[in-house]
Image 1 (spheres, rainbow, N blue to C red):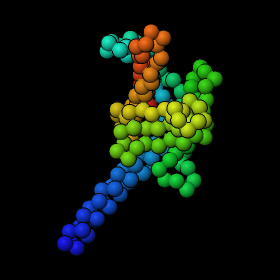
Image 2: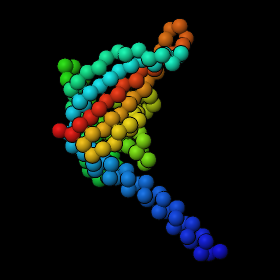
Image 3: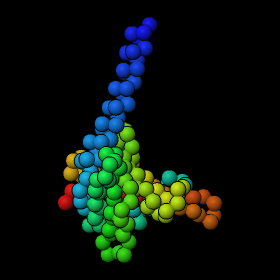
Image 4: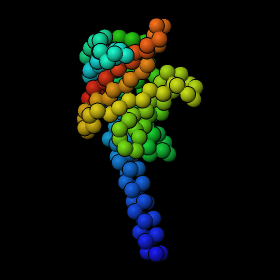
Length: 155
């Protein structure tokens, strides 16, 4: 019975460390300067219909740098072309399953409702594609959603 517990504990430890290892590799892979090569924005209505809003090339630059003493988080700086919008020195990370990216304090400095979370759709060494969905309040009661998709390429 002791052997069973030992093997079960070792197996659980192996599983949890494997997830962390993927997260560390991804964090290291993402470090550097990325061109936001393409941005597509659509509105998804409550009935499921989709309306194109915009499609833009060379939207901006995302820089991810290592955070001293932390192997999972990166610090992000984001500058958008043709805009005064710029963020710098804020935390970024991916989840352990590499399905989501988190831009912390993107919309504000509060604890809740300020982060921008995206789904990783393409995960290649020099190419990433992420989609972000946010609810749009509708005064008529039926809320729509805005989906922003970024395609990033390494500079």
